[in-house]
Image (cartoon, rainbow, N blue to C red; front, side, top):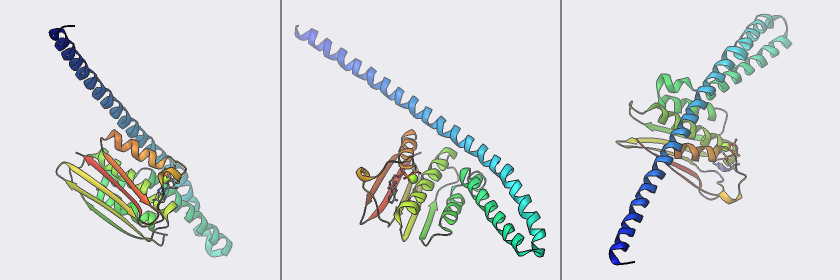
Length: 231
Ligand SMILES: Nc1ncnc2c1ncn2[C@@H]1O[C@H](COP(=O)(O)OP(=O)(O)OP(=O)(O)O)[C@@H](O)[C@H]1O
Ligand SMILES: [Mg+2]
């Protein structure tokens, strides 16, 4: 092969590399779009289930609680039943709201995250701070991403970490949103845990939004989850 033929071959290889790179980028985008559509569909389904729960079991329990309350003055045992029915109703309402937080649509990310923290930490001996600083123009799918990652992370801290303090911070700059979730609990090491759905789902969601997710955890320093989302 002479020099001119070699040059032609190299040029051709470089061209084909470029074509493959473009194809790969295109496929990655197709997968990310697909993942996003899948999450959106899941959110729609959760909203439907949440409404069913609220309008079905929720309404039945409301009726039951009311009737028991009106009969309660005649019998202390009925009063106890009314209280239990009331607790079941409160549980169903909370489940329905956590499944599809309409507050996110109605009032936006800051009130929704404050509400989430209040709800989750209500009966826990855990201090928390929730500092959210975002503009009114934050896209809805990004608000949902932040809400769901925060929800999973806080539930994990409560379930697994026994922390004294949990800190939630969201900051928006002109082309980025940064979410930071920190607990001072017992931490974990990735190669020693039994994998669940939570962390993997966080990672999948982050990938679909081209976001960077960093999970730092160690027994001495608790767990820090940092999500950086490009806008
Ligand atoms: N903040 C945390 N502190 C300590 N350990 C944690 C924390 N978050 C996760 N872990 C560990 O990582 C494991 C995997 O978490 P992951 O959320 O994926 O699953 P899970 O919470 O066990 O179940 P689920 O599928 O319901 O989320 C947990 O079982 C736990 O051992
Ligand atoms: Mg979990």
